[in-house]
Length: 80
Image (cartoon, rainbow, N blue to C red; front, side, top):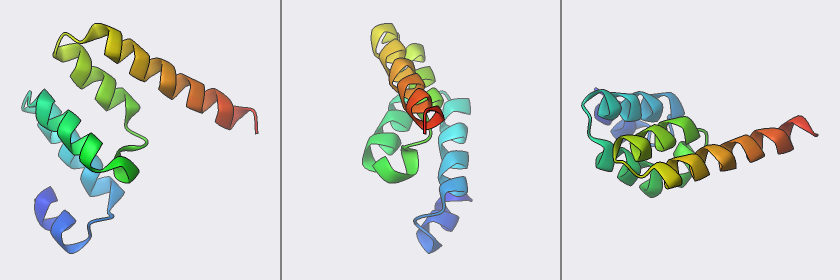
């Protein structure tokens, strides 16, 4: 269903997020990372999902780095 929505409206962030969550539920962690890297703009706010996929692929250091980057972005936003 999310693919149909994204075909009609490629910039639908909610549909993209649903697609990423579905891929996580299906344990398709490489696909999650591919989707996030192919869609930088839509995947910008999905740092936790990216970190989780990395963690499940046993790429723990990268997962921690992704969370640190997300936390730094949040800290910058809070300081405005």
